[in-house]
Length: 137
Image: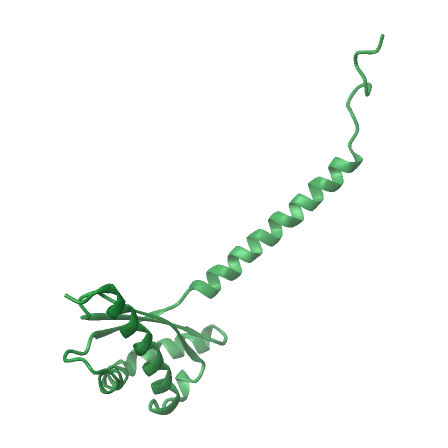
């Protein structure tokens, strides 16, 4: 069984190989907006999970997802050519949703900050319901 460090090094190498393959080897215009964001390899080096993002509108994203699945075999072949290991890991292509989730989180934080500013403004102009000092003599 391989150690975690070797799996991490192999994942980094797979990320570079697949990014280069998308630019040079894959002759499909539908994947030109695809960016490989991360690769993970299991410790036994049998499974490679590759995360990717697509820049563009929803239609472009859907077309790119289909194109990535259609080119999975070509990408695995290029991965096998670039790696110096006996068994080439199976390739799992996963759309990366981190940028969309980050945008949603930023929107929530922006709304919370606006509400905080609104409450701070109300707090500045607030006055006591009764007298300022209810314990007057």
